[in-house]
Image 1 (cartoon, protein in one colour):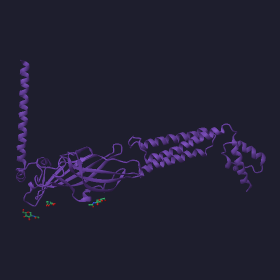
Image 2: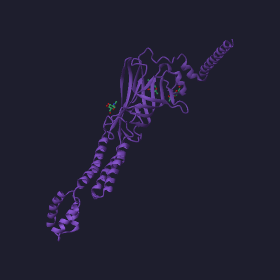
Image 3: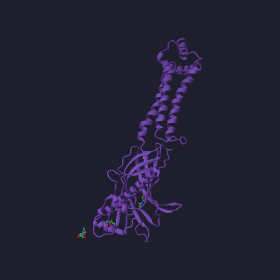
Image 4: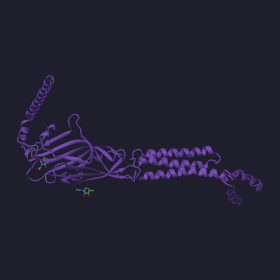
Length: 382
Ligand SMILES: *[C@@H]1O[C@H](CO)[C@@H](O)[C@H](O)[C@H]1NC(C)=O
Ligand SMILES: *[C@@H]1O[C@H](CO)[C@@H](O)[C@H](O)[C@H]1NC(C)=O
Ligand SMILES: *[C@@H]1O[C@H](CO)[C@@H](O)[C@H](O)[C@H]1NC(C)=O
């Protein structure tokens, strides 16, 4: 009994809440009507926002223009870029024609009362409309019925990158706008000013890239459900190499030279030569790892920087191996320098001078001693 009563009470409360909600929605609608000034109220009379302009009279043409406010990140790992754009759309709605010669700027919230194109950004992974302090949109109606609708959007758009020439590469990214539901029989898109429709790129300062070229094009997107209008904005990004020269190329080249320092160090000082060899190999490994951190981990393709660093690494590694081999080969032979000292002191005592021996100080086996001896004799005979 109690349970039935309780559930009945619950039903009653829910009914009450739904009634209240209905009332508040109704009053909001009425209030909206009250807020509208007489001109707009007249405009909206008999206006059906669910029907496009020229509903039975050919397609409505929508002109687009873009302003790139910023390109925040270009990510090689995710193969995308994040940009903040101002998207402006213009079209003519014959139902909104009014008398006068001044345009009418409406509150952005009144967009809800108008028909607007269902444009979307193809390949966008994540987008949002800025809403501080109000939703960043603008609507302006001209006396001849032209509507200007502008939005500020931040969007992350996929951009396929070919990184084989990294870091000497150029990437071409696109921003594609399509109509979601209206096909080409209902809506046509065009760039309002051709190649100049997109502005803001020339003044943009990007961390790692410079914008080389940008242009616009229009085409059609073909899906199973039909043909849809499509506008494409292409821009070509060129990576600035200077950063990589300073961060990777110069240090790795210097490391190779550093590994050669060990060739001037006496072969008998094992710790010094091993130390230089191992240190340069380890530093090079760190450098190679550092150069990869901002790149996708897929190892299936080789980039230009990998080739360069790989060659540097093999030079450095070779210097270390050279010492190991040289050291091993002299282990079983008498010290070459001592052999020579003895030879010259006994054979050419009057020629024997220490500084001549500087030319010959690094001979690694008894056989090479003999070869160098003949060279030395030629030298002293002169
Ligand atoms: C704008 O229209 C008003 C009348 O509607 C007219 O008096 C005025 O001269 C017009 N201004 C311009 C710049 O055309
Ligand atoms: C309507 O008026 C605006 C502003 O005066 C103008 O830019 C636009 O071209 C006009 N549209 C048409 C279809 O005449
Ligand atoms: C825009 O630029 C592209 C590439 O530079 C060019 O092929 C095209 O003809 C240009 N379009 C117009 C309308 O100038």
